[in-house]
Length: 475
Ligand SMILES: *[C@@H]1O[C@H](CO)[C@@H](O)[C@H](O)[C@H]1NC(C)=O
Ligand SMILES: *[C@@H]1O[C@H](CO)[C@@H](O)[C@H](O)[C@H]1NC(C)=O
Ligand SMILES: *[C@@H]1O[C@H](CO)[C@@H](O)[C@H](O)[C@H]1NC(C)=O
Image (cartoon, rainbow, N blue to C red; front, side, top):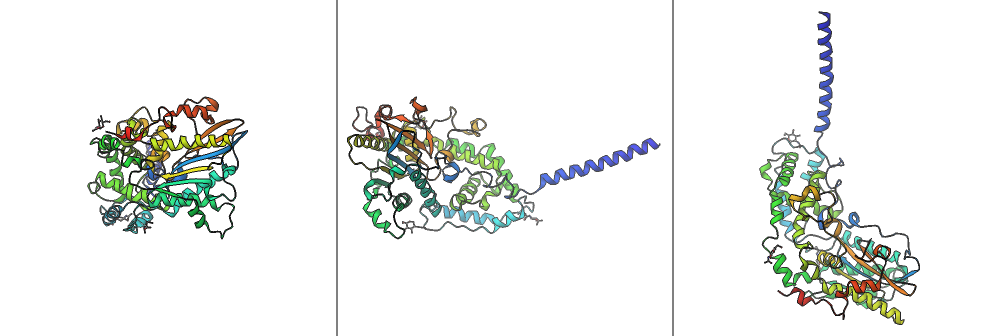
C-alpha cells in the first residue's frame, strides 16, 4: 500500500519534472526567430551572388607597405576591376511596390512566427528604389574601389610616386555611369597621394586622359554584348534557364517558401517561387548591397535558406558563365591581349631604359573580369555542374561561387617585377595571390615573364597564334 503510494508519488514528481523539462525545451524551440539571433537574416550569411559586398569576398592583400618579393622591384601594374556596389535597374521599383503590397497580408493567419521587432521593421519598410536609378554606383561602391586603390598604392609605393604625374598611368572604362565613376574614384586616389589637400585634382584628372570606350563596337570591355557566337549559342539559347527554373519550382525552394510563409504568417499559396525570389533579390539582397546592412526583407530567412538561395543564384548564372562554353572565356581575347601587351611592352621599355606608364587600369563588369580570369586559367570549376541535383555535393565548398569570384569591385591584377636581370609576374584575383597554371617557379606565384609570354602566347600581340576577336565571335 505504502509502496504503491510511493511509486505513484515518484511517478507524479517525475512527470512534473519531465513535463517542465519538455515545456522549457519547447519554449526554447518556439522562441520566435529573430534577426538578433545569429542564424537569421543577412547578419548570418553575407553571400549574395554577384551582389556580394567586396569586403566579404576579398582576399588579404598584404597590408604592410612595400611588400615586393625579395630582390625584386615593381615595374608595372595592370588591373581590371568591376565597378563597386550600385543601384539596381529601373524595373526594380515595380518589384518593390509589389513587396509593399504584400506587406499588408503579414500575419493574416494570425500565427506569424517572426519576433515582433522584426515584424515591425518589415511593416515599416517602404520601397526605396527611385525612378532614375539606372544602376548608378553608390557611395558605398565608391568606397569599395577606394579601398582597392589604397591597398595597391601601399603595396607598391615605387609605382605611385608622390605626387604622380598625370601621364604616369593609363585609364580606360566602359561607357556607363558606374564604370566611369569607378575609374574617376580610382584615379583620384592615386593623384591625391602627395598632393596638397586643396590642389586641383579635377584638372589632374583631365590631364590624365581618362578614356571611355564608346559602347558601340566595344570588343574590349563590353565584348559579351556584341559577340554574336556568345549571344547565339549561350545567351539566347532556349535551355539557358532550364536548370534555374527546375530548381525554382523544386522541393528545396518549396521548403523555403513553407518556412518563410510560416514565419510571416501568410498562407503558403500567397508566395509563388518567383515571388520568393523577388523577396530574396529585390528585398533582401539588394538592401544588403545598397546599405551594407541587414535589411528587414532578410529577416524571414534562416542562414540555411540564404545559403540555398545563393546557390540558386549560382545555378542561374552558371549556364552563361561556365567553362564548358569555350566562347565564354575566349571572347575576352582583346582584353587578354591588352594585359599581355602591357606587361610585354613595360618589360621591353624597362630593358631599353625608356619611359613607360607605371600602371594600366581598366574598369568594367562581371563578365569582363570573369571571362579574362577564365581565359588565363586562373580559376577552376567543379567537376559537377551547378544544378539542383548536385546541391548536396556543391553547397559547401563549390568553386563556382559568384559571391566569392565576382563580388562588387571584383578585380584581377598583374604585377610585373624586375628581379635581378629577370622579369617576373605576380597575379592577384580579388587581391589574393594566385598561381599561373603550370608555372613551377615558387608555385607559379612569381612566374618568369618568359614563361608567361609563352604560356599565354595567344594573347601576345603580334605572336603567331594571336587570338582574333572577330574570328572567335563569328557564327
Ligand atoms: C499575429 O496575430 C495574432 C492574432 O491577432 C497576434 O496575437 C500576434 O501577436 C501577431 N503576431 C505578430 C508577430 O504580430
Ligand atoms: C545616375 O547617373 C546619371 C549620369 O551621371 C545621372 O544623370 C543621374 O541623375 C544619376 N541618377 C541617380 C539616381 O543618381
Ligand atoms: C544550347 O546549349 C546546348 C548545351 O550547351 C548546346 O548543345 C546547343 O548547341 C546550344 N544551342 C545553340 C543554338 O547553340
